[in-house]
Image (tube, rainbow over all chains, first blue to last red):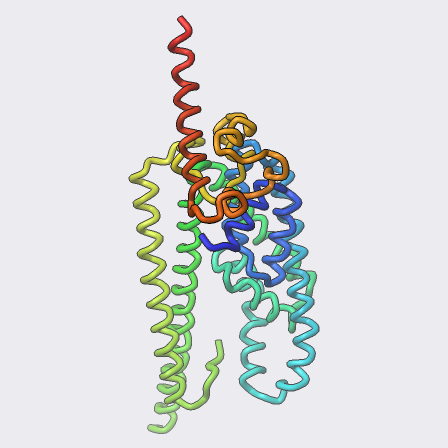
Length: 203
Length: 129
């Protein structure tokens, strides 16, 4: 484990729920915090009687949603500057169009499955999405994240480190599958367009 | 989904890069996840089990005392560290503060102390009659 992870685990066992809330807030706001590992650890600590499960889950959810909202605001402010500069470029417009069409799914999945991509997705959502929609999507996604990850930590108690490693690997695997899926979709569109173009030329 | 680069040659390169990254990530993390599952299955997960070998450098003495249901003051006495102002410090920090040249010394001492006290606790009820 890294020094940062060790620091947060020591602090979590020493300071409990307030530290947990702060850590999830910082993680969602884009700081390098091992948030998923802390959620699993918090579940295990709750089982050991160190933390109150309901209270910790509630405050953790509040922290994570507040952090997501802050990174959304970064995206909103930064997005205005970027849009002013790049709105004339087709690549930027295309990227925004694609993201806006799939933003809710992207926001939802990056809360608990492809968690490393959560911060850039928040920034991108801030550029063009409505906060009201974003808020309910993150509330649902973060609730699943805290209940499932924390629940596994609670369930497996002293073996939580192994469970955390498995969940981290699962997130990386999902990211790989998502990248492959994007490649397949783009290839499919490319060849469909190419075939249509060749068909038109033959006629 | 729209296609980012418009030049077909660039697009092929882009797709190739995406496929390569996707395959690398899937294979690496897929194998790692399978390995984790196998470890979970072979180590036999038991709810709430406590093993002194699970003690790590990030843990604090009060945390260890709570998990193993021991007295924190007894553990401080066993490892030779004063309890005042040590409650929020990890074993690694205590090691740096009190035994700077001895890497991993306190973790070893705590494991040994916990093992001994757990053994004593299990022996006591047998000796009573």
